[in-house]
Amino acid sequence: MKKPIAITLGDPAGIGPEIIAKAFRDAPAVTQGCFVVGDVATLRRAAQLTSVGQIALPVALLETPDQALRLPPRCLPVWQLGALAAPVPFGRVQASAGRLAADCVVWAAQAALRGELAALVTAPLNKEALALAGAPHASYPGHTEMLQALAAAHGGKSLLAMPVRMMLANDELRVVLVSIHVSLRDAIEAVTFDNVLQTLHITHEALRATLGRLPRIAVAGLNPHAGEGGLFGREEIDIIAPALAAARAQGLQVSGPFAPDTVFMRSRAKGGQPGEFDVVVAMYHDQGLIPVKYLGVEKGVNVTLGLPLVRTSPDHGTAFDIAGTGQADASSLIAAIRMARQLSERSNG
Image (cartoon, rainbow, N blue to C red):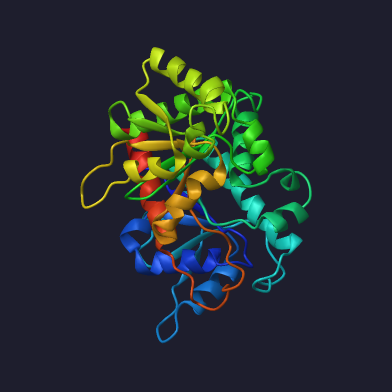
């Protein structure tokens, strides 16, 4: 690697620091060339937490981020960003924790936008703590919206000119969402011709670069049975199908709209055999994320499509209920780092 990968701390009261320490301990080949944007004291506590019965993972304070490229494996390199008076208590929503977590994302995103990083991997934020962190962080529902705003500002563009989408992926299924962190009522309102068509284009461009061919895109309907010919709603007839027709006319390989309760099964890869489709475009957050997470939270990776940088994340939250217990599973974070490395190599290749 010619440039390092940055991993942001996540909420220091949650499991982010613990899974980071476990990833550097258990997956040295995957984390080689990576460093953490965060707080040394918090990560030393995490290293101690994950070292029961063995020597704690050494934590190295970096003088420059690219030092991470030259450090030996099973060492936890940290770029210190600000400082907490002491590591915050586990499992509590705290403004100071939300502020540090968000500041880490801002620093890393700006470094990536300047071309100093190969990719960005984000450990989980807590949305309540983010809301308590004050301006400007409180205005963002989550990582995706924050990164969109930072990328738009860096490029001198409006938010509308920097459309992004969330993709959740594992070895069996990829899902892209038309809307993300909004209420269900607002998500239904977001199913418009323009939003569906834009989602198809973002998905097409991202997957074409990843697969090296035209992706086979399936589209889920909004209503049960995809509206059953208008009996259960007309969104499929009046909005989704016309957007698909426009996409096909523009050269995209799209199919649907299909009944949401079967399209994910048709797209799932099993037993080494690919599914019928490469990706499913879902109309709203839970419609798409429930099937992916049901297959195993420990396998899922969140990828932000449409950004001028590579960003991945584990597909779980801060898990305050088990923070500090040593029980957190780092598998999803390790998968996110591995995917970030693969995506950055393809984008640079």
